[in-house]
Amino acid sequence: MIPANLLEDDLIIETEVQSSRTYGLYPDKIQGYITDADAVWQAVYKMLNTEKYEYPIYSFDYGIALEDLIGKDPDYVVIEIERRISECLLSDERISDVTDFEFEENGDELHISFLVKSIYGDLNVTKEVTY
Image (cartoon, rainbow, N blue to C red; front, side):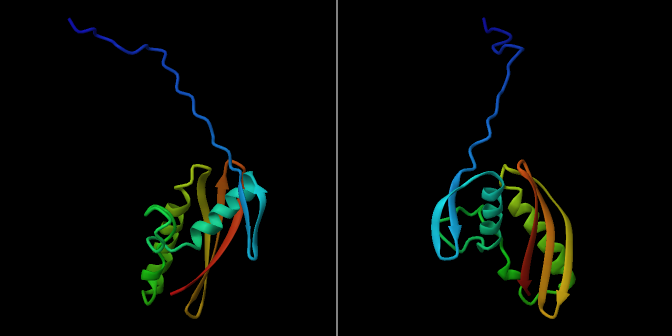
């Protein structure tokens, strides 16, 4: 005979947010530790400035693919860049949403501003892309 129900009905799953503590990265040195909102800002900066699939030290899920947008139609670039930024940043469990995208074209450069909502608060982020 096989029992009909092997699991208890009142199963509770608890999740725990991992620590955000990481090394502070500065243009000329690595110094000290940062946590919470500063760590999220640094993670956003690193993800948006790391070309996806380019560096073997990172997994294929890390970074953003921008190089293939060079030479594409500006309307396509605007739509695609919003999707890629959101997809890239939402892979971090500390980030809940990426909203309020604003685009400003200047020749072959695209200036992008957007809001990153994280568990530690909101971050205003800007990024420039040449296409």
